[in-house]
Length: 394
Image (tube, rainbow, N blue to C red; front, side, top):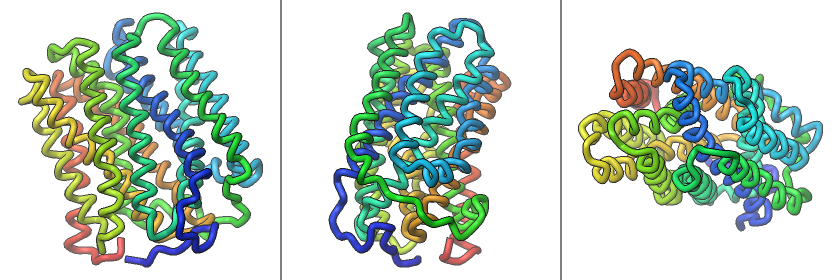
């Protein structure tokens, strides 16, 4: 494993808290908005009689938007500055969020999804770059664990808000928009602390996808399971007999699992010689948890317990994968690699809703679990294969 190097801010040993707070505030808003918005939008479309396949297709616009935004985000930040680009993204995300309430025709939700998720992708990429710039190399795992924990708080808060607000009226949309706009405050206050992007990356954007394939494959699986699961789990849960609020609370439990495991996982990754072992172990847990879902459908409490641990492992794929990436690259290369990392996440978000939604339509309700198990099974095969046959570098 390559030794971690310092980022653009030099050999800082202490965490640069003003930058970290600003970046985490932005990413928390994204988590709340997505955690509230994905189940909210899916339930509304379900009530309108839209099929699971079409709901999955609309949800997949998130990934298409992210795939389009990822390659240009670094250029925008280079031209405009990191903080100004993030502030514009906040405005676009908030406006498109409230726009869903006023868009009565189903086709209107496609451009709104693209605008919303393009903006939130920009926030993801620049927040993570800002966080890496603020993190001392020897404490990168801790910092990314804090980041993932707070993001998980946002994801957990979103479904909890949904369970309290319901899906009727403008209120849930307004709450999501206000949460996003609140992120502009710390970004603006810390705008002078935002890192500069003065250098060009040394490789083409797509080259960064293949530098650390175990990490980029992990975030692809994470994207497929996260967005596909968040979008369609409320439908799966209500069809197998749970109420709307019960389904939302199960998503909240999954978010709590994400929250409590990320700092320990991040710190553990700092002490491992080969992070691929941890990535493989979390994928095995994800596989086992998804296979268990059909047998837990009659017991809300047991399902909640499994989702608690399952959720932590699933989210850990992103945290540990990002830590693995950050330990190898610095400066503009790290920014470009992070954009490529998010690009792979976006590809997963396109595949996930499509595959899971179609699996429900073709195989019945439990097609949800089988599709997710298939994603994890592919990653287990890949990661174990590379561990056994491809050496210790990637």
